[in-house]
Length: 326
Image (cartoon, rainbow, N blue to C red; front, side, top):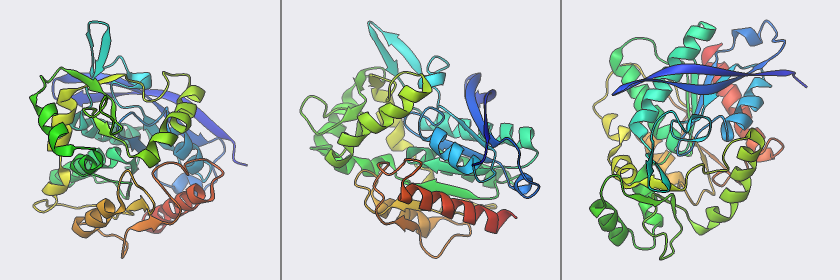
């Protein structure tokens, strides 16, 4: 077994209205071989609630066990970065603003920090809505014409607009959410019930059962607020997330895009596999003949270190990175 080092770090993020410092974490082998030292570093980001305190632990340790140096972090407003930005008090409530534009800035900052720390542009691997933020970051790097990441791995990519199909009455919910003031608090999730139909993030019944127990166990281990780390989300989060669509920019995008391995759970009922199929069709960089749709993989139910589906996913990521960067 590879001995790992876990290191807590901090890095600056330039947002549209100022620079703030986020806390992150690096996972790396304690005694890397000469061949492992030639591997590129990896940045892992997740979307709605963060990385280091959830799947970042799992993916970071799995890749570090194969010789990689992995940097991950919680997005602003959640977990270890809950008090940095994107939360406001409204009476007795803490209202979290979920900003994919901010998350794009965080991916760019994490990429820059990791390059400076390890002397090489990192691979970017992203989970779910984090893949939407990272796609925007990859596109911005392509436009800039400077350094680009060497490999890109979006997993369970989906646009917020597509998630609306899970709502019990998406037309009525959408209209009602648009009428709310931007700072109005709404529940974090919409489970299709009358009480929560105006929630920010829809959850299908197949996913609802797993999220509290499994994701809660990750955050319990990390010593932070139990997942999802927020009780209410701003109505502005919903409006801005629907409008955030970097996929639309790919049609007119120019510049160098990295080779990509697009991964999706074939049995995912929350983020539909068709989302990654469509992304694969429009992605302008080098890619596999088809997205990797993993049989037996739902959204995150198989995300555990000993699960054969998770190990298969990590093996494919490792193989793809080595094929394109070594």
